[in-house]
Image 1 (cartoon, chains in turn green, purple):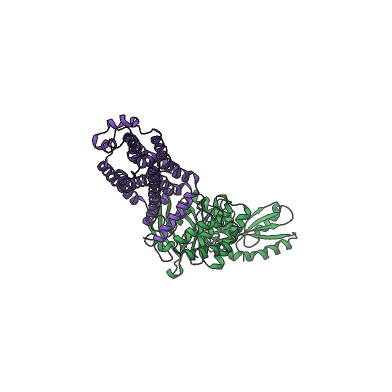
Image 2 (image 1 turned 135 degrees about the vertical axis):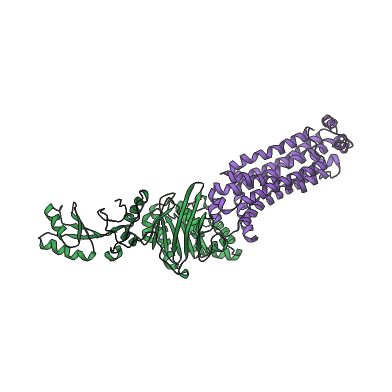
Length: 361
Length: 269
């Protein structure tokens, strides 16, 4: 599925309306309701733009997924937001602070899990944490108490006094996450938190992040190319491609921007005959119709059409085993955006199509 | 300056170095060989020579009177001890602060890139200048400490082994004092300055050490020159050489400091 611009789920161009909405258009939010805001943030390395004209806003307590392939600009974004890199143009504010002018003050209030954990393998887990705590301004006693508390909380006591050289990738990520949380940061940047982890460790880390975000109400910026964890954790997502923001919003809203209608799978016990496809096509609200091994796949303009569709089939004497609305997954949305980014076309236009969360309610 | 953070970085770096045999052992072995084993062997050899100064007379003949005078005026049995432990080892001693500061600086600067710990360090609330000072002090102070402790051991060994011959304390000489208090810190700073610059380009501590090795060679040639009488280092020349090292070192460090900023470091991380 490679929709170019706004399409219905069968790939047909959707009807344009007079209302044009960019996917990366950001609704105005009062400054007190914003944890992170960027405006035209750009940075290049040599001739290569790493981030180009990024404008987003992240609300307090929100989990934002920065999605994109390697080299999309996710890590550069985190570095710019934490004042580690200086933008070429544009500006950012995090917790009301300028990351460049107020870098140290900001970094006291943010925590970062870098992609490669960044632990000194010659130190023990406890020493790695104590070092960070001391640099973050805790007294020796306070640092020791806090580190012990966090080690207990994250169940790392059995390895606390081992050098991290022998740690598994999962243990390293967990320790790096503990380090990022030592000072109870208001904003947490997580750069590929599950890369290199086995499925069990991935599930554990994702659950941990979910808990941290939901229970503690932190603002989280999650850089990932794993759609599963983004789907589970993120409130909104920003899709980057070669440094350019391709889409920004809730996955459901982005899907609604990309496609009209709702795909429905009809399990009729066998492949639908041509006459049955004609019947389906004549039901009010049904758009595209296609046969499938189980029966047929139709596109309807509203979830409310499903009962009528069932009634029409039953009235025609067709056995209906199941009717399954199939809203687009995050994966569908992401790859549609990526495909559009790879083959740029004029920006899509919005229609009155229902949001996916409405049709799938 | 954020001294608690600076102390934390220094403490972390030194703890890590202590646990790294590849870094720590050479820092112990080279000073031990140069400042303990070598004077001990020479002292024992001088004692075994039974008071004959013939072994060193050829060399002393080639030295100018001003430098050879204090040696030739002593009894023949003391001449070798005076020449070697009192004079010839002094420039060689400079290898110790140079090597230690260079190795530690390479580990502190390029090593962070090699271990991929640089980025997490840059995300900490620590000003660029504090981080730079921490990395400098973390190499400079141990280099000086090892040099000075090494010299104390050298003085104990040299005087102890020579006592049956000399019957007096002959180390430190004036030249040694200049070397210890003036030239050695300058050389340590020079090693740092070079490593700060080299580490900006090197991706690993080993690569930085190899590039920085170009610095240590002139010092070794200086020592060899001293030993063969080709290059004479008297007191004033030692002071002048020390001043020259300080100027170059401070220039290199100042240039390194100007380029030491988060943005540049992150771009390399």
